[in-house]
Amino acid sequence: MRNVIVVLLILAALWLASCTSCNQQSDEDVAVVETFSESSPFTIEVKKERSFFQAEKIAKRLTRMGLGGYVIPEESADGTWYKVVSGALPDSAAVDAYIAKLDTCFNIKDVAVVDYTQLDTIARHPVVKDSIQERHRIAALQPDVPECIMQVISKFPESDMFYLSSIGMLTLNSDGIRRSEGHSVDMPRGISLNFLKSKGCKAIASVIYKDNIYGDNVTLQVVRCKDTTQVVQASIMPSFTAQNETAVLLCNEVADRILETGVYDEESKSPFEKQAYQKLSGFVASFIHKNVKRSYFIFTDEAGEYIYMAQSTKNKEDEMFEFIGEIGKSEGLVMYDEFYNSFYTVSNEMEDKEEFLGYYMEKLTWSYARQKNYAAWAKKMVGHWQSSMVFSNDDRGCWEYSIFDLLNDTQGQRIYSVLYRNNLNPSYLRTIYGVQGAAIRGFWGDLSEVNFGYGRYVVALNPVGVYSERDLIQRAEKLQFQEGGYNATTTSEETNTKEI
Picture 1 (tube, rainbow, N blue to C red):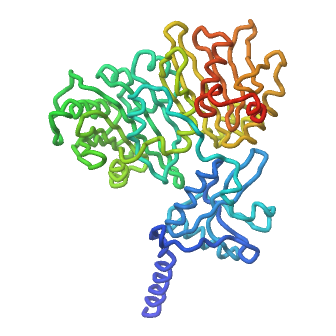
Picture 2: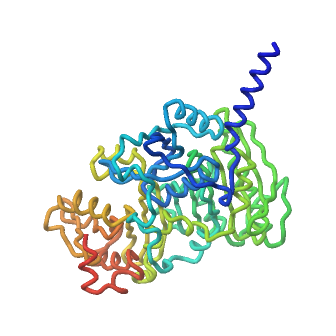
Picture 3: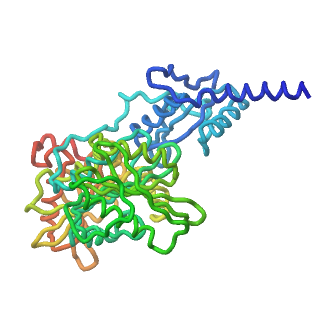
């Protein structure tokens, strides 16, 4: 028996030693990351991304976790990917042990083994940042959108642990809500856009954050509100001030609406407070749904200017409180490349003082390629972000534009020029933004779309109201695919160099 105990103690000590690196390290403590080679030909693929800068964030996070992460390139029939890998392992036994460690200590699953000997020369070496074609940030001026939109943008937390999976953002007026139909605006059950509008709210942004390693979702809605009446007195209240009493009461009503949908079990509501850019006060509305506990956090700030609604699929309240504590402490969504490089294409001076109604963004998955019957161009879109912006004109009605951000000029050229434009009817071709685009017409000759490729972007403008081809081209050339729009700095000589 004594020998058995000794063996068990030794095994326990070895297991604890193997998990020592589960403790996260600061950037200053991290040693040089070991990469795979001929002598240690195996490494473990944790994730892969289209954007080098997204992959780099994950690699740095793995390194802070004590694992060591680095990025290698992959060229495939579906385009360029950047693999985030960890470890330099000599044999299959070491591979099995490392995969077990990732699972046991870090809960990292669904990994793949990469073999150094099976890769070409370029793919064997970590990516050098200076060698990539992807631009980190485009040059642009602040978009011409309502101040309330910029205000909600500024309140979202910044974190290297997440990327933005989807965004629905709109002004809360009748046109904005009507044009949001058909777009994704994730909302808590029981809460509608019209309800928020009826309470005097001005704008909303609903964002789904996705953990870039584990895949867990955190949803956060930020609502810009103003003083309003017709709210229900709460039975239990957090502390509040004369400035935010109305907003706190509205938070209570929102919490009650979530719980009164009639589809949840074991419902409860409790007050909470958390310090962020200001002290935040509100309620945790908890319930059981399909045998899983879920919690919504509904709260406001000291000034009563914003209402927040948050939920996580992970359902760890301590982590949610930590996330909430970062609200309003940075520039918000502007700090995320995937948002900045699409939203900042909006014109800095809208045509005819047109009104911004909404912005919608999603990261395309393989379901998108499946919907397009796995067309070659559609498969190359997977892993990139698609965004749409909607505007209104008092005389002509609405128009919208959508962009695919392909991250670099070469990829943009392959997608638009080679796989799309070269197969069009020549009568559709037009010069737009100084490059060759197209005006697509339907069976009856009516204009359905104006599109073009410019640099990293594939762009399509659609007339929802009464817009001529010239109207849409004018609006296209005010968009900031270069700072200030096409006419701001472009000369004919520069235009020729930009054509794709």
